[in-house]
Image 1 (cartoon, rainbow, N blue to C red):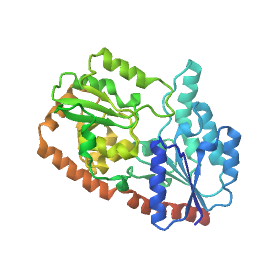
Image 2: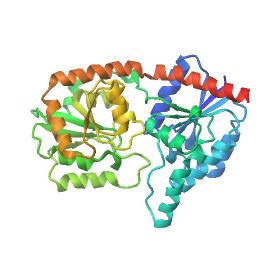
Image 3: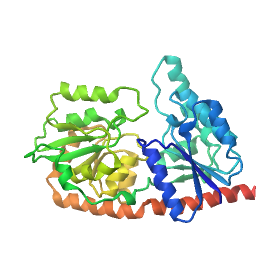
Image 4: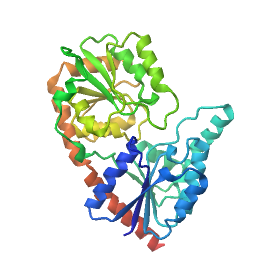
Length: 365
């Protein structure tokens, strides 16, 4: 099967990392697959021309994120639809994000709100649509996409990234003699991670320091990272919060070595690459009580949940888990099991079957 994987190749992009891990796992499973980067496309014509170049392949798999197709959501929707429409081969699409809320004038916001509900016209062109959350699957099924064409797959865990924990390098993040426990928010800094809520939760905790291990996403032009730094200083929390900045893959083990607990205060996750690294390193996680993380907890991940947008409950959960090493070890054991169950190699096996189904479905028509 002559298959093509289409995604970004940006070294500072979680979905690009996901694509690299998946491609390697697919190749290890014996599948010949060619990678094509969307980064080369700057205009609508570029996307159309790229799609036309794919006419002779057996299958196309797109890793879809709106920013890959344009920074403006309206143009992104148009480019996404046109690109998929021009592809004549069986098409598999992994949908990583529902269309986000628009920022701009009233007309632009209304237009993007309509597009939010019209996303089905973009993704309905896929022979098979993969999503990492049951909530997104329900959205598209309710929007009219045949549920037989939707697959829910847990976001895979990058097993090849598990490295020995580097305690010596990790200690350099804190000043000598600082014995406080480290709780970490890992990954790109975005408003959807509710840092303000976490700052509220830690302000009265004296036995821990918050490590924000990430920087702004390359596509983020909101200035949120600078706003967060200003808020930390305004609240007088500079001594309790460490801003690490973007974490290259070679330094992830340093961060995980130092971290007793990882926080995932996201309320709208459809699959999180940063969470998958917490699983890979068997770190106990405190996550917001949402349907997505409830489902993961029920599936055996080592997660404690705190009340939805409840900073006080988060503070209590942090204190309780820091004071309970036995419970932290129990959660770590669950994470190790989940890492094996939801590895990229097992995801690749399931993906190969999806490819066969997509091609077989076209042949049967």
